[in-house]
Length: 362
Image (cartoon, rainbow, N blue to C red; front, side):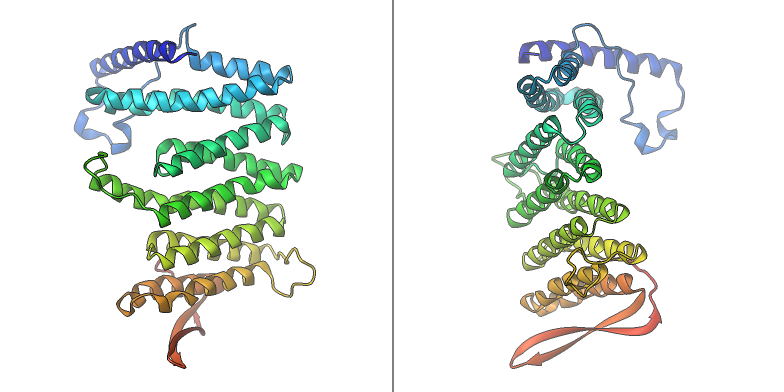
């Protein structure tokens, strides 16, 4: 699985993609202007051969698990992540063929990691091999965030695997595995809020790259929501509380930095998990706490609201629409927010009405 072998395989793989595409064009299943946009980058995966390094890597990892060889397994995961990057770089370097190569080459590299993931989840069930996979995946994602690449497709893919491991670990009560994707997701979004991608001709960062970064950054919070949803299904109020905390802290950071996209994602996460926990009749995990989880969600919406006075007054209405919608969706009744000054300080207070809430989004 050396870099040279991978490069040689990808050259052959790219030729196979091109041959398959040409053969499909001859069949003319549909005219170019008569198919939906999601079909344009769909390609058939070329038949694999005996020299496929990605297939070899996944096979070695499976044998390592069977033989209880943690060191070899860890090297397989690290190599798989490295080869994922190499595959993406290969497609991007072939600019004329990038549209043809990018999706299918990345999918092939991802499938190798997915095979390793499937075996470790089936055979190890929250044990040492699972922890190794989770830790190496976390290290990969964090390293990408340090390069302002946390919104790349490969990070979404690897974070998705981490999230699935976390949800599965709920069945085995391995708390650190459950919380790992929650922690990593919050931290890489926080990094993006504190240090957003900026256009730079010298580094090749374009304005469209900046737009896509800010569009994708809030979606990374979905991992937090997915773990929280699974915790509600398992009646695990403590893990749910940690997810609410992640949304609360991140939402406060976002409003302080005027990142409305991330703050809105946190508000949606809080009201959604709050509503689900209320429907599930969950109680707080701490026996001395009088609040229910949905009230902890409301509490964290209040945290975000408390930072609104720090924003310029001309931005208040923009933020208030989202915060009012979060309160209203959580309770199911229309809310408004009143403002008043106390000793020269502006304060906001949510007020509930008796009218049922009609959603218009956050």
